[in-house]
Image 1: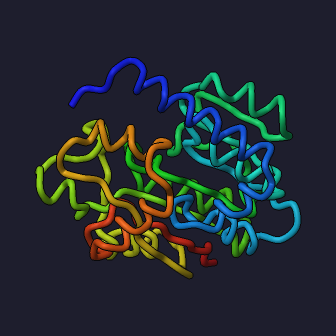
Image 2 (image 1 turned 90 degrees about the vertical axis):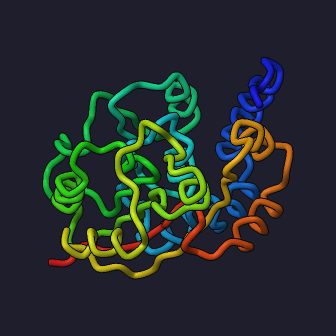
Amino acid sequence: MALSTSQWKSIHDFQENELQRILGDKVFLESCSRRDHYSRIGQWVDGLGSRPKVLELGCGPGRYVAFLERLGCDVIGVDPVRYETWGRISSQSSAQFQDNVFAENLPFDDGVFVGVACLGAMLYFDKPDKALAEIRRILRPNGSILLRNVNSGNLFERFTGRRIDPASRNTYSINALLDLLARSGFQVRDSFSYGFYPPVFQEYYWYLVNGKISLGFQELLSAALPSAMRVNHVVFAVKQD
């Protein structure tokens, strides 16, 4: 089912409003940041200490950069390409952005970050193992990583034999993801799986989850699935010395 122009506009307007609420509505920010849908990013930040220096790797439009800054982090968002939303976020916060940055060759000194968040970007890395080595290098001792990546056994992929995003390169089962982190020098502290994505009517479902059905209902759909069939795996891990 192809979406109409008005439906695509509705998606855009919902995402713009959500970003503004992250930047300006403290109650909304605190509530959302604890939920699985937002990778429990607030819980992760709680463990980083006061005003931690944090990198968001592959930040895209910058929604999670806004989260991190408003949750009290000194945050830099990096991505290979620049997004128009960056200027809006920077004008309302202390967040910084840098484009033309690739995960396999990070332009930062050793041990300068308390935490690195990578929320979906590893899907597109050329060499995930090299990217994790770079993340480990720029983290201080006992530094923390928040990693979200698509589950290779998700409902959509099981039924269609295709990936949710055809451009993605790297999906993992939870065991494969945990093994990759362990081999890369990280100790996993917590993990969970979240998300429902249907094998049919994907565009229309995207329209629905952008403002037409509640986050609570989306969470019920996720909970109805076995964890091995949910969309994303989220992992909290620390650098091992």
